[in-house]
Image (cartoon, rainbow, N blue to C red; front, side, top):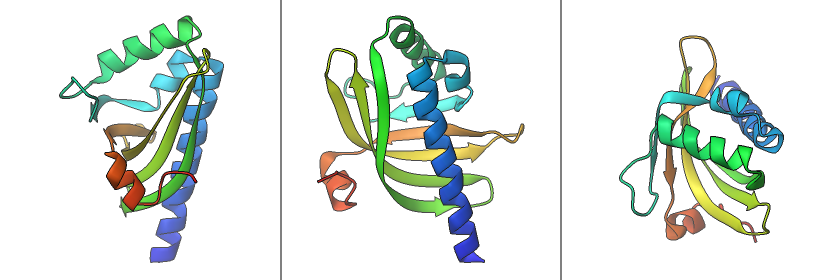
Length: 140
């Protein structure tokens, strides 16, 4: 049973990450924000205690409308915990800008299956470099 649950949670994460990548590349703000919970909190951004849904939406809306983001990719996967309606995992996220700049960091993500059955991002924490390295998330 545990193997099946882990396999299922990995598939849910894979599908969610693929949807994030696809919506960013398509600059589809509506579909992208449907993957983010209204209750979302982002922690670990220098200069901010937390970032919520409204700020996240405004940032994505600006970046999508102005063609700032070229794409996003995820490498590595480490499951931290999983239940029937919550999955916590770590991965390495790289955001590629159209000007050639890249912003890469380890992230810890909490997905939750909300009342409508959609898996959405509820919490994201930017990982300190030492933690991402320890978890072997940083690509070689």
